[in-house]
Each structure stands twice: as structure tokens, then as C-alpha cells.
Image (cartoon, rainbow, N blue to C red; front, side):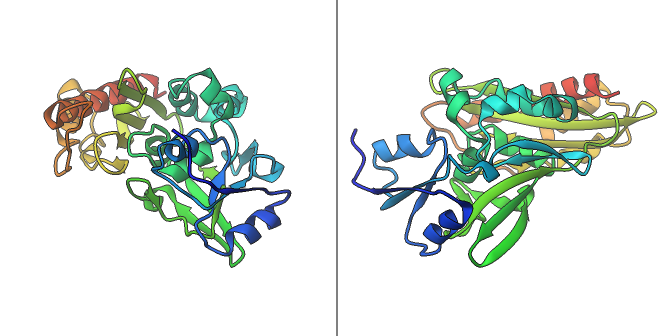
Amino acid sequence: MIPASFDYVRAGSLREALNALAAADGTKVLAGGHSLLPMMRFRLAQPPRLLDVSELSELRGIDEHRRGARIGATTPYRELLESVLLKERFPIIAECTEGIGDLQVRNRGTIGGSLAHADPASDMPAVMLALDATFNLRSKRGKRSVAAREFFQGPFATALAEDELLIDILLPPLPKGAGTAYVSQDQAASGYALAGAAAVVARTRRTVSHAVVALTGVGEVSRLIGSTDQLVGTGGEPEVLSRVAAGAVEGLQIDGDIHAPADYRRHLATVVVRRALEKALERAK
């Protein structure tokens, strides 16, 4: 397929990028392009102009931030995998990233592009929810911060305004001794998650003191599950994990599609939640 015609602008500075977005004329931001360009080829997206921000150094990089980390929006997946800081403090990010796309996608695709695209079956939104990340946004009008838990609003829909740019992601430190895990069951051809779960669990004297799980791939938007409250205050016994996993899909609207019927996807959700919790508990110190 051939995309519809469009104008192309490469931003030489952050100011140029924000000026280009200020018109709110349907301009789409291009970083790695692995989400946007396929949609343009099938004319599912027909932006009048592409704004290339891939060369803006201020949008790239991984740094320590208040005992946590800051990740620039245009940082490619490859750098997430190579970061010693992330491996030490947030190993779930590397665990998730290893399963994203192929080598070419991981070399060019960016974390910010994936988050702003908000594909319901993408992996990283669930991880950001479980880590309680914050996204910094900028426009000519000013700056604002949005919690990941308020950012994803629907399929391919986020809190980003048309004139705003995602600048970076801030990750707070994990609870002391927390274990993390990301488990997904992928669709074989596309590699997208039929169901994926990101878990963060901490113990205090063998008792679970913190438990968070976020699901992706099973609904219109990645979301936290409420049943993890049942895990806090327990020892993480198998029967408790079974209850939490079974409760993970309660109240969720899960639809079937060409890749999986609703009942099968619902079952997969309970499986990945339990496996993610088991791994996180094993890794909790």
C-alpha cells in the first residue's frame, strides 16, 4: 500500500517542534515510525504533515532521577536493554522489551512513540502502569505532568493534546526489595499480546506488603486490576494467587477477534496474571 501524500518537517530543536505542533492541524510526531508508518501505509492514518523529532538529543537518554529513573521519550528500545541503571532498578523493563518486535524494531522503535500510540495490545503501557510512571508533556502553552494511570484513555487514545509532545517518563523507586515480572502470551504472527501482565510485589517479613498488576491485550486499554488487594497481608499462598488471578477479569469487557475468541482471551488473562505474580514473588527479597 502507498500512503496518502503528506508534508515532512524535521525539527532542529525542541522549540521548533513545539512551534510546529502549536497549529494543532493534525500533524503527527515521528520518532522511530514503527507504529505510525504501517498505519499510514494502509491509510488507517492520513496525517497532513509528519514532524520528525528523532534528532532531538534532549528527548533521548536514561538518567537517575530521585532514586528512580528518567527515560527520554525518543529513547529506542535497544538503549532500554543496554541500560545498567534500568537493569538494576527496573528489570521488568528489560524483561518486557526483550519480547517487543524484532531486532530492527528494537533498534529504531522508541518507548515514547509506543506509549503515545497506545495500542491496546502493546506491552509497555502495562509496565508503566505497574511502575506508577509519570509522563511529562510540553507545548507552547506550557508544561504539565500526567500519571500513567490517567494517560491511557482508550484504544489509540491518550491524554496528549494535539499540540503537546511527550518529553520524558519518570519512574519512582520501587518498594524496598520488590520483585517484578512481565508475562505475555503473544499472537504468533504479529508478536502483539493476546494477554500480558506486569506485576510488582514486595514482602515485609514474608508477608506481602505491596502488590500491583496491570493487564494489556484483553480490552480497549491497559489497566490495573483490583483483585491484587486480596494478596496484601498474605504470604502469597497458591490459593490466594488463584483467587487474585480469577478476579483479574471480573467486570472487564473482553471481546473476541480474529486472533482469539473472548473466552480464550479471558482464560489467558488469568494465566498470565498468576504467572507474573508467581515470578514477582520469587524475585522479591
